[in-house]
Image 1 (tube, protein in one colour):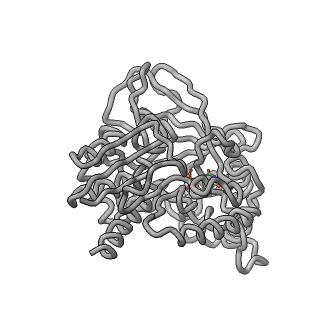
Image 2: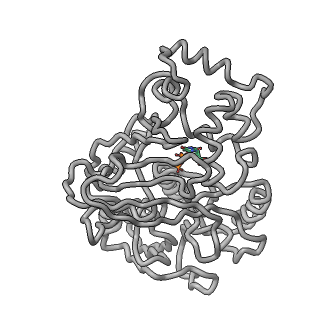
Image 3: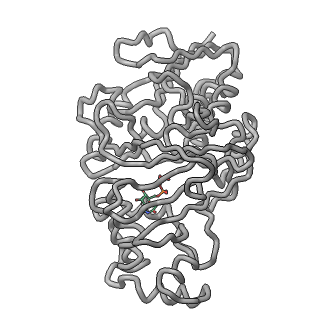
Length: 370
Ligand code: UDP
């Protein structure tokens, strides 16, 4: 019978484990943390009873019907629309930038066509091909909106000038010329009724899946007994950082409690550069179907990832991409390994990307091994 080792119990590892478990095989999933679920881990807060996204807010959204159908085998997805507000210079605005934001910010009453034309006049025409985050914003929005909603926030979140970041990061955020304040443009969106951890439990509760927690993978780990190994940890850690560390931003949280409702919304971003945190999340608003007298909220701060920190956002600066290319060459020389997920491929991925790619990887593995 085939034996598989899966390193990491986040979505990549859990999807691979779940899919492979339908075939005759034995699967060992290891994770260095004390819990499954990776950064999607949720738990009930002891003091308030609120379901807390321990590593920051996770709102499931996707255009991929296969992924949407897949995840709902393991949870009841409750309808949820993420509506984010931004505080800037003493005002609360609506995000992503939409007609309400534009009219409020400039003190106007423009309709969609007028707003499109108006914003068109603000954009920097001298930028033909935006080469970075800043140029992308200046080309399409002009200086005032860029300074208000992107410059300060991005500098805090990424710890560098937005001109050093790829334009692709900004492309994650739409600008709307109507009043839609849905943060995502995805076809499907929701929050699992029982939190994310329950999804992972249901996915991996199989007789042929063994999970070992608090188990770190290193080069001394006995791997020769496995037919194939799926690695979802950091790619640089796998090779003991021999070409150097890839840079990530990490986030950390300051917890607060209040009675009732603290801020009236799940997420409020703080775009002023002098406010030290990037955003505040109040998790009871992610489960509007639940009732809680008290509330718990988290101020989110961002910093460079130290050796003991959880890596969150791959920075993908030029020097990172050069190191990544070297690591990827070494991955190609391994015969019975698949590297997948955000950390093992060093990419900015949402949950639905991770799940979609893991499903494809298992299919590819099956095809190659028939
Ligand atoms: N961003 C910003 N202002 C905001 C929200 C986002 O400048 O109020 C920038 C920031 O650089 C961030 C990027 O847009 O990294 C993508 O935002 P998104 O909300 O997708 O980030 P994530 O969900 O990964 O935290």
